Image (cartoon, rainbow, N blue to C red; front, top):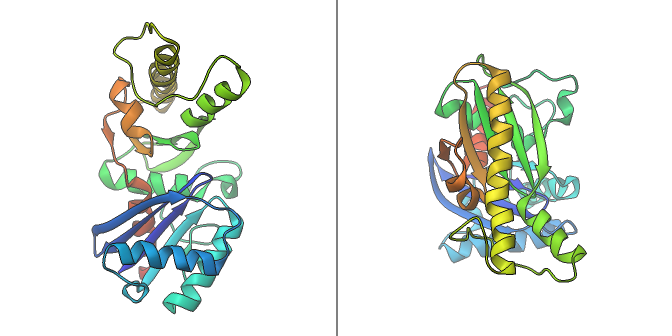
Length: 256
């Protein structure tokens, strides 16, 4: 079984694959200071909850936006799993051309998302990842990553608003019944959900105009299911897109 892990700045998403099938998946908080031993205990607990164990994992692949956690993942793979983890980064065969001035700046999660999106449909493509930041990734008609945009994430924006404005407060991230809210909570929900839907649609349309052709739009990330239903441009939501991209990259490196 292949363990795929995407370590983000706020959340870590993990999945266990049996062949092409994602048979288990988890979403946990990312802890930057977590040691290899602590990570091993966490993984052991997550697997045990589903009736599995560390010995079920025969291979592992990961992307990490937190360098110290990438090191911990490598140590866990060596000590607990008895193999070398594939950490997506420079030198790893992805099958994706990075047609940008500084390829090493492109995050491993963005590479994985683009790889997985191309497995679903040909380019041109726009991938929208709703995470700590909202990443917009552009894939050309011939299947190359050509750049993108980064916007503050929805939770980051709402939390910052609550911290800076004394009369505002934390809200449940859901769409209100109407854009014109009648309470402070509804006002904030409208600005957050409908406002971010407008931001997404605006950027996606600019991407589509620059990419040319009928660019497909795929969304992923923890809050994709909250915002995407209110967007006009998003065609489909794939919650586990990054994990699927990691699996495909792992496969390519087995064949090379």
